[in-house]
Amino acid sequence: MPGDQWQAKLDTYLDGELPPEEAKALDAHLRACPSCTAEMSSRVQLRRVVKNVGNRYTLSSDFRRRMTTIAVPQKSSRRGWWWIAAAAAAVIVVAGVIGYSSSRGLSREQIYSELADQHVATLASNTPVDVVSTDRHTVKPWFQGKIPFTFNLPELPADSEFSLIGGRVSYLHQTPGAHLIYEVRKHQISVFIFQDRAILEMLTSEGHVGRKLSFNVESWNHDGLRFFVMGDASAEDIHKLGRLLRNADAS
Amino acid sequence: MEDSKHRVAGATFADLAVPLFDQLYNFAHWLTQNREEAEDLVQETYTKALRGFASFQPGTNFRAWMYRILRNTFLTSRTGLKVTMTVPLDEGDNEPVRASDATTPETLLISQSDQQLVQTALEELPVPFREILLLCEVEEMSYQEIAEALSIPLGTVMSRLSRARSALREILRERLEGNQACPATSGKQN
Image (cartoon, rainbow over all chains, first blue to last red; front, side, top):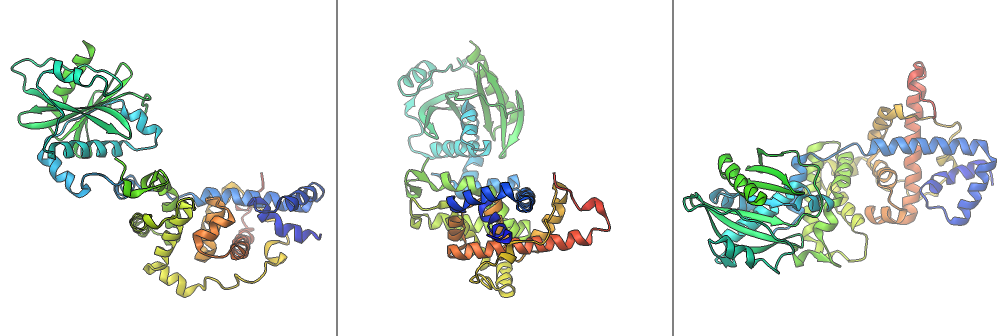
């Protein structure tokens, strides 16, 4: 076969689409033909550059967020939850879900959105909690056998501005967890606790009050668990609740 | 949290479609050459795909299906219509591949430092050539998958790819020859 006919097959060969027998014959030819070998290396090199250049456009984080709301259907109305969320002060505490989420390739924003949706959907429900009690000694044992871990809740003094309303089992991507509802000055607060699946390295907001998705957020790590406090309550209230939970966890 | 209406063979639309954000956006940007238009195109693609997910055949190629929706959406957009009016999509597609299309009299030397040159050359290629090169060399799709994504026969994939590569090499050769007065820009092979 003349050299130019071999050269016509080089790209098909590099695409992995040449039938095995022809590929074998071309291999043999390349070992004996310097000009085809040179042509082959030049094409490989051009492909390398095309591949680099061809991958140059990346999504902005804003657009990725927007696309996520389109591609990931939610139970509650995406359009409605901001409005409801604004009416109900929300503090969301997440322990340990982030490592799991990153292993599934989900963004933190997706986790926040899902938990915010659960919070809003729960408060909008006629039966927001399955165990109704202000007593942590009633609420905590109720979860036994329902979730695969145990947790500590703070003992609230009689004059505390925070009060426990009750709890229910929650699921985040098939992972069961505890969903507790507190109240502070008539603001409903959700506390989610999930089992730690992996240690999250990407969070850097250690003990820091910041803002995410218009919620105030506080995050800390304790005994291998990553805690998240998130809500549109004041940064001060979030910090206070965070401190109560940290103290309960340390006791 | 999974919506049973959006499940196919155990996978939800989100399971299948979210991992494709980056590559579909990249492809859309190459087609439109404009960030805003690319975002609109991807968004419309996902909206259409979600709506039509019930008609997606489980077991067939989801990625090719998404690319097909994106490309059809592009072709009916303002920019896409301009492309189809100025570039006949299938001109020469049915001609057999000639050896002279794929071969070159002297070896073309492209180095990593020629990225800008390749970038410009790809942008200058007609859309049908640009898109097929991206699907093959950047997305590393098989010919079959490209045929599904572009809704063209397998033979057309092969002939169009060959012509696209020749056209790319031709542009690069012209540029490199034009740059010969400045030897630093004509790269040497590693």
